[in-house]
Image (cartoon, rainbow, N blue to C red; front, side):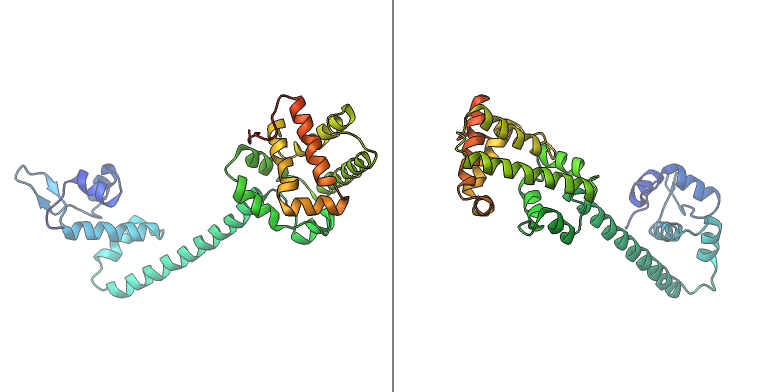
Amino acid sequence: MNEDLTVGRTADLVGVSVRTLHHWDAIGLVRPSGRTRSDYRVYSAADVARLHQVLVYRELGFPLAEIGKLLDDPAVDAPSHLRRQRAELTERINHLQAMVSSVDRMLKATTSGIQLSPAEQIEIFGTSWRPEWIDEAESRWGDTTAWAQYAERTSALAPADWSNIAAKTTALEADLTAAMSAGLTPGSPNANALAERHRTLLTTYFDCTHSMHACIARSYTDDPRYAEYYEQTAPGLSTWLRDTIFANAEAHGIDPTSAVWE
């Protein structure tokens, strides 16, 4: 800095208020050493350097009176003091980084929804469950309203709640298998009732519209992993369930082949 600065410009430069600079001037902590031709007081480069020192000490928690003594004492070893300042700042940074890591872990636990360990997830949902599916779903739908609803609704669920949901899912899949085996036709009243029951179970996590339901149903045959899951439950179930959901969506005015996530 080659020019002296007014109080206002100095305040902007170091990030404090003009009132603060006036106060520090009044108590003799940092006084502007220059004058303009109009007799306005201005800060020199050395004054600004002193201001930065004051800010560092203040950030470390030193009282202003003690800061003044440190800066004005000729016996103070400035390099040693700066090294001590640096060490204290580094310690504080490390502490804050550890806090950030803790917050990140809490955020991940909250946004992922399922408050269970991978082992607990498999114990409740069965060996076919893959905990990494949560991360995959978040990467795909994390910026949607549905995902926000999922995170909010599931973040407070206890293991007992998840066990109850898993039991309802198992019972529904058993009824779907029985209906398919009995030759229940997609689009029939009873088949539509099962489709609605399936959609209602999904609303545990988010507001599942008939259009969204149809989008999900497409994955039951298009995604090999979903297809494998339902085929292991009962051969032909992935296609039958898709067709059943499609027929119910059509009954509610949705074209399942062109349905979108809304």
